[in-house]
Image 1: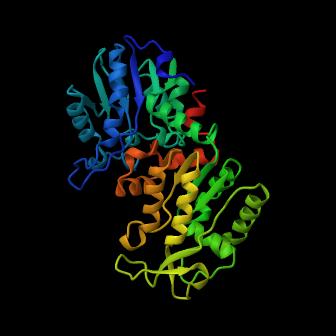
Image 2: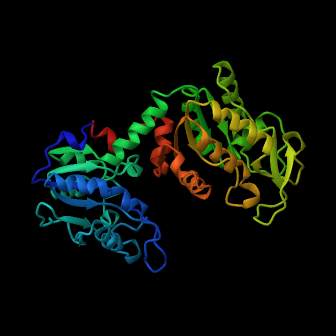
Length: 386
């Protein structure tokens, strides 16, 4: 794939697909501008090349064809202008063309207001492509979706490339999964094996060690014959879990299971937490975190890793009584000398909660695309650029 430095941008109209899907409060005010700040270097680099910039993005999940103020990118245009200390023109009606000169910046209204965006409509893609001369795909979080503004648009551009944010994401993931320092450790948490089965299968082919957390770990504990009480686990995937454990054993992969857990009688922040061995879980217990002995053992594995890929907490970290396991893991990763890559919404939230952002080598905010990359799936919006 081409990158920005492969293309002469002088006097070109550059269309950049960014991820400006920022959180807004009920009054339409931006509550976090992290995604806007992330694109500032890209914009400044392209402006310095003497280009004009046309920004495309989505926000939320509006109904196509229906203009909804709560999904408007107008607040983003205003905040971007303040951060750049430069005017950012907001265009609501842009499909028939945009007047723009080198050095100017235009942010187009939410692409998901356009009928055909989600279905990768060719006619819509042609109209979007006609806005500029060069297309820059810089929104990794949307790369797993074949949509008009991420995928089909590339087919109708004279020149297209990936942007710096996508480039850095791919470099980080490649360093972690394709050319890792060994041992390669993956930590996969989450509620269900079913939603991350392909991730687990693909990672078992690559990693040396695989630590499981949350409901996923519960399903594997059930497969190993331990009592689950009222814990979240998937009975339909017990045989799948057994097969994955057998596969890990045959291929020499380390797949440790918890030896102790933190349980409660109810799923609540006020529930009383009790540490039990995994064979002592009662019929009315719910497993909500790994126990301190397990956390200590996992921290030792983390300390010896050469590369760490982290996706998902190991317990209900939102509740203080059940945050201990994820906190120990986060702090162990932060202290580790390993190259670390973390991604997924809950993972990022845990990293922020425990204040270890600066000690993780790369943090991906791309939930679905990050997962599909871990699954080994091709990402349509990037495949089309090859």
